[in-house]
Length: 332
Image 1 (cartoon, rainbow, N blue to C red):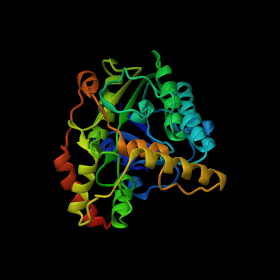
Image 2 (image 1 turned 180 degrees about the vertical axis):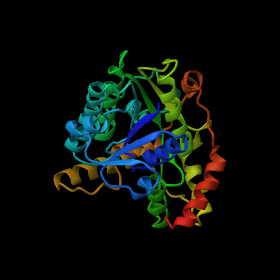
Image 3 (image 1 turned 120 degrees about the vertical axis):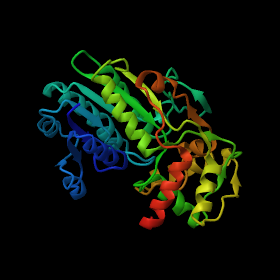
Image 4 (image 1 turned 180 degrees about the horizontal axis):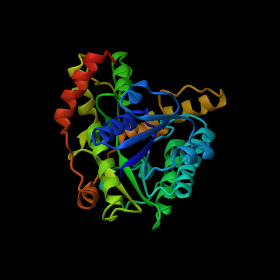
C-alpha cells in the first residue's frame, strides 16, 4: 500500500483517512465532488468528478495499488434513483476501474444497516444475514453494493468491507451537529423504553480499521472477501449517551417520551405525505429512524480483532473530551 486513492476524500471519514495516510508517507489522491484546498496543501492530488463516470474513474485509478471506497449517498431520505446510481452503480464502477487498472486492494466502507431488519441486534456477528425488508433506500443500496464488493474478491483484486456504526468525533458535520440542533430546539423525544444500546465508533478508530484492512489485503489476505463490524469496545445506552453529550454542551436533557408504535406510525404518515407532495426535505420522522432510535443495535467485534488485529485506539471517554473541545472551538 503505497499509491492510494480515496473516494469521498472530502467527507468526514474520507478526510480523516487521507490525513492519516499522508502521515504514514503514502502517495495519496482523492476523488470528490469538490476541490479541497486543505488536502492539496498536504500534497494530496484532488480529482473532482463523479464515481458514476467509469471513464473518469479508470483515468484517476491508473498506477494506484490500493483504493479506499468511502464515497456514498448517506441519509435516510431521497430518491431511489439517486441512492442506487451513487451507491450501487458507483461501486460497480469502482470495482470495474480497479480491475481494468490492475488495482490489487479495495477497502469498502459499508454500514451495519445492511443487517438491520427492524429487530433488536445485541452482540451479533458477521454471520447475521442481510436485511430482507430494509426501510430506506440507503440501507437497501448499501446491501447491494456490499454484496458486489465481496463478490469481486479474486486473486487479482482483494476486497474487504468494513461496517463502522454511528461514526463521531472532531470533524463530524452530520451526526452530532444534527443531534445538537434537535436538542437546542427541544424537538427530540426518547422513542420506546429508552433502554436500547447501540454501537458507536470514534473517527480515529474507524480510520485505524481501514488502515488495518488494507494492510491485511497486502500481506496475509486472511480477511479478503469478508465484512467486519467496527466500533468501540463497549456499546452505549443511546439516550444516556445523548443526554451526557447535551449536559456537556449546556443543552436541556431529553426527558419526553413517545411509544415506538406511535413514532413508527408518524414516520409512515410523514413518508407518505412527503412522497405525495414530492418533497425533497427529509421528514422529521421515518419508519427507519423510529426503529434506529428505539431498538438495540450493537455488534461483536471479535472477528475484526482476531483477523485484522483491530482495537480501539481512543476510548469513548477520551473521544467525548476531544469532541467537546472541538465543538466549543468550532462553534458547531
